[in-house]
Length: 156
Image (cartoon, rainbow, N blue to C red; front, side):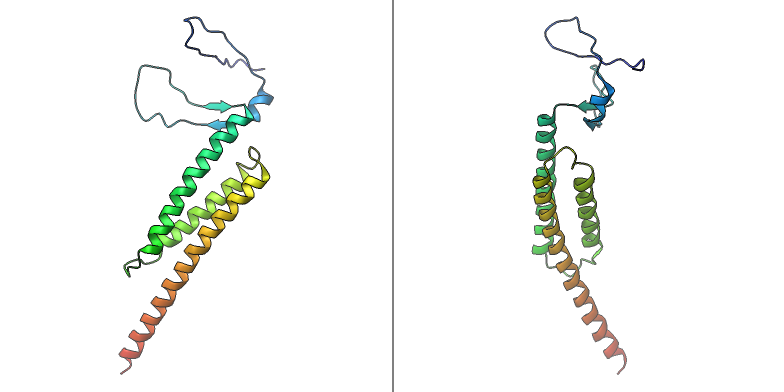
């Protein structure tokens, strides 16, 4: 074991016990890096490793649920908004972001979650991607029709 120290902090008393963890156990844990957006006089946390598997599952499921609800709301807003001012850039960025998130689910969260749960979430993401691809195809067809009309008017 290296010379790094790990501390266990409680609210019970002023004295704290120094606890050393096995690095093998820490490697199997889930790493979280806090944002530290505000300043305070307390302890600054640079890295948090969660070791308990049930707690990891709860955190990841909540995180995935929030992210999927955000994507679903975004897709609903895009589909409901039939304005012609969309140039497809927003749609393509959303598709790229969804595919990136699907890869994160498949390769990063897969070792901490059940296989069935990951498959269900990937299918949900693929459904959202399908809807966005339909919107992109409809938009590209409208652009093609518009360009054909412009070229036919120019020829006269």
